[in-house]
Length: 440
Image (cartoon, rainbow, N blue to C red; front, side, top):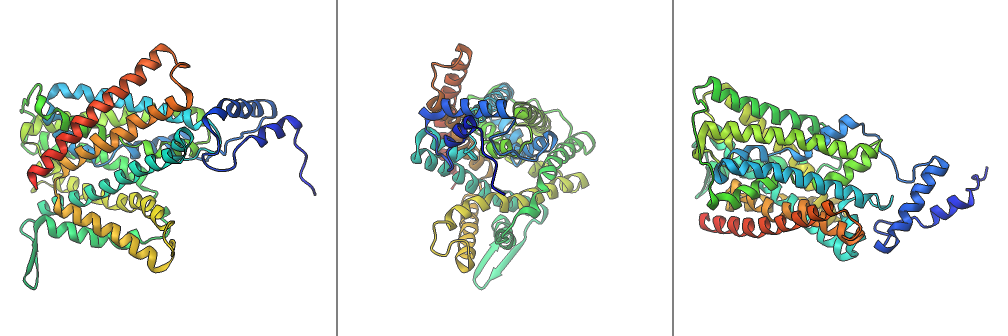
């Protein structure tokens, strides 16, 4: 049976929809959106491919994307900037939530847009796609490195004075555990399908709640108390503090995926609001609790301050160890796949194994050479997260839609975010690189 003929007006809609990623240009966008909406209204169809994720599931996925190892360093961030810097956490949450909405508006430009790099290509062509991809993959790479540093630090706290002799070479402490973590992670990175790791969305949210509960219990029941006053404001540590705050909200790379996975895309703004509200409550609670407990002596990972003899401290540390271990493979996969697509052997056989082994090995080498979790996370936040979460969404949105078509309030908001992003990015990146250089 031959397929039914489309009404002529619907044929006109279909013919202008690009069949490849990044196919529409900015000048074609108004016509494209108008015809898509006309088809949906007139013929009762949905031009954009719909997903199957419910509102609740998308919220879990979004909270998991935003909540991660940043919750461990948030008390340290507060200690670096002082109590007044906590207001900037709220500012970053509001700004990043708004730029998430800007990404949705860009995604609504056509059904062909499926990812963050697609938005970059729509705005600036192939150079935009490359720029967005570089920032996303570099951010993922350094976060994987941070995972290994975290594993080494916390395992060293659980098993102090551990060492291993290989001939005349002796490896001990954090370096030993970082190396062992890399070896343990390597086989997982070779898996062809990471679908079995999809449960981390709920697990990641649960892990954050467990960590907050364990730290609070240590303060309330294990004799630590909440008596530290801390500093009201510390200008010298503010760049590091702001970089860590920015790192806490670096989930924009997955927002387009979450949007496309939803059954009802119109609920995405509500999803963003729920995710940022929940994560901000978790981050601010951990920051206040940890800073009241340890003051300016709080470590870059608050779990390193916990009394090791306490059972709740051990739960917190083991939870910290399991969560990044699972997420490492998920974050490495997109970067590894992008490299494999450009190799002669592709993702087959020895080529695939060597690519992922080299990526894991290089992150291990950097983690051993620069075992500075707090400063590395501040660098990621100041440079990569600020660009990916604040600057690029605004720049791409302005390129596609222009500033003249926006309300005065929106124009001020976008320009304010751009100015804030540049200031935080420049000062935070300089401060983080200087501190890393001093510690090496």
